[in-house]
Image (cartoon, rainbow, N blue to C red):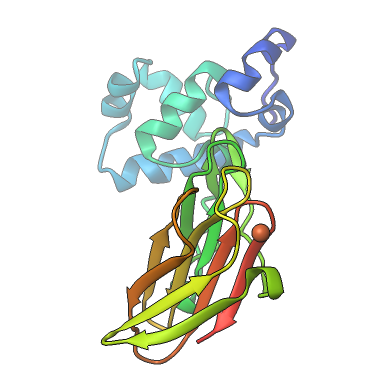
Length: 220
Ligand SMILES: [Fe+2]
């Protein structure tokens, strides 16, 4: 059974962070099954969930049986209440990551193109910022413009680079990663092209993220 959406909701799309197309693709039965599972996970009765959400118990029962979808204005409320993303709620599937996905070797970096927020994830989940789904940065071998010099100073690595550190072109962050740990340093325009970080055992890789040219990696 499909949920039908009024065209007047188009104006709300941007504010709500999803499109009418996404909502009209919602499968009520699948979303209903997910809502039931999430409610039961929180050990709530239909009446308790209904009260918290400000709807009738009959409405909750109807959604969970897939006989109708929640009103569009309620979807963000439901997503917040159950702590899931709107996209997964609409898909009716949380797409859990496989257990082996949560190790550092799979750590991915994400940078929001709007606000510059830096996020990391070691699984296959979706990350969102400023209303957009973020794509992980793909690391390239460091070219000559993004090369680094690494020397050992006491227990640290002293890392220097000649890359510009100007407002519209700078290194956003540097990260050292081994199999079981990651050390991340945020950098800012106008600061010098150097940083000092504790050495991590096991070598690993150093990542440099350029605000203009993307992510680069160097073997340590
Ligand atoms: Fe660059």
